[in-house]
Amino acid sequence: MINIRQRRQQVSAVRSQSGHRTIRSIATETHIPKSSVHRHLSAIRQRDQFPESSLWASPMGEQWLQRLVVAAIYVFGIKRGVGAESLCEFFHKLQLENHIGISVSSLRKIQGILEGEILTYQKAEHERLSQACTPLPKMCVGVDETWFEQTVLVMMELSSGYLLVDEMTASHRYNIWQQSIQPVLKQWQGQIQYCVNDRAKALIKLALNDLGCPSIADLFHAMRKLTQGLGREMENRLAKRQRRLRELKEQNAPSALEIQTLQSEVDNLHAAQADFRQHLRQISLGLHPFDVEAQSAQTTQQVSLKLEQQVVKLKQFQKIRQLKDASGSIDKFNRQIDDLSAIVDVWWEWVHQSLAAPTLTASLMAWLTTVLLPLCYWHTQVQRTHKPALTAYYQTAYQQAQAALIVHPITSSLDVQTYRNWVDWANEMVTKFQRTTAAVEGRNGYLTQIHHNRRGLSPHRLRVMTAIHNFDLQRADDSTAAERLFKQAHPDLFQSVLAQMPDLPLPRRRAKSSTAPILAMPGVPA
Image (cartoon, rainbow, N blue to C red):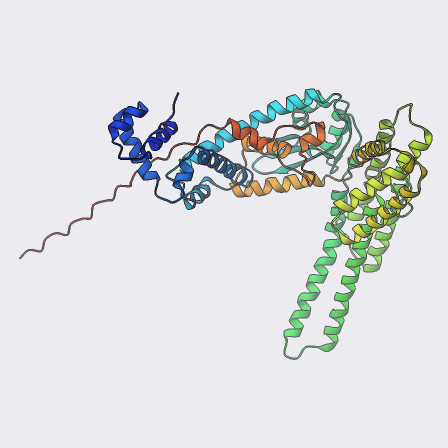
């Protein structure tokens, strides 16, 4: 069936032929009623007001306009929270109002159709990838909650970033979590190796009882407690002394002795903050499967001992700097040491399970675990870390591991393909060591921004954002979360939904608002 756009293109093509063409001749050649030809010609004259109008009227131009409108709604309307009013203004600036329907209501309708296609794509691709990926991969997950009008429960596969649970609920109680993770348990039962969380009782119980895996403390939240305790206390002291120092300097006759005393206290607090950051740095450097200096593999017991030593030093630091630590942040951190360091043995057990093949020799096993794994691990840490002080440690460790790899005899004995296969295995295992839920916190921050932009976040929109997160957002290697989890490629999300979108609506003339008649002034009597 020929639609209005195709008929208008036929009329335009016949009209553009040489010579004067009457409405009757155009109607005869196109087999379109004269009244319709007249209406189409009026619309064409209304449309062709700008130099680029002929381009947009062509079949190729209309396809490009379709991509432009859908892409703008997809990127700005859905992913960035820009309203339909702003998009309408944007398209008016491009002078497209005579080519396509770009009213606010039309754009909202297009966005609704687009969101429906995204959810359809997610359902179909998730089922297809789950069936194609056999056996299902083992996972390490992170769980957390964030709060808007309702509670949002988030469970993410940390190594890939794939969202397993992302839904709005009435609360974050344990029984609500149980209901939310039922699809995950049905599909991934027995494949979850450990669960990282912020020590909330419901989340610990969820990991131990329902997921059937160890519950690992989140290093990010544990160190944040320290900064909220000791760090904030030092920051408050420093702010008070700096404010008092500015007030003294603004006086007409300031006391030189008092200024000198305050300046000395400010310098001491700056030094204390530097010492405190060094303690935090040592905590971070200690919680790794390899010793950052000796390059040797670590156990949970060795890591626990390092963290306990840092607790002793922090208490000495607190005593020397005369800090109150009213929140008891040091003791809170000390109680989490066992749950923080437990990830080391869990990860090493995972490594050895993946190498449980009878064909592996003892020498090759030693090369993989003591030479190749440290190299890939420290390389990943160098790329992931943005703090210069930590990066320097990781860079040194990476260089030492690289030197050990080069001189090892097994390295030169392997062919290129075998070496690449083992490097891929090592890189995959490195991603399985996840000591924080930083990716989950980043997701929560993104949702907060979207919630603020839209002045709210509906459950339907949250499901759409979940699909985009899993199948569209890409890392530096251009891989999506679904590709990293299932190790299977999938069609491009935007291209797939673009192909399913209907034609854009035709432009309509706005109804002119009626103006109230001006009241006539009464005549002045003679």
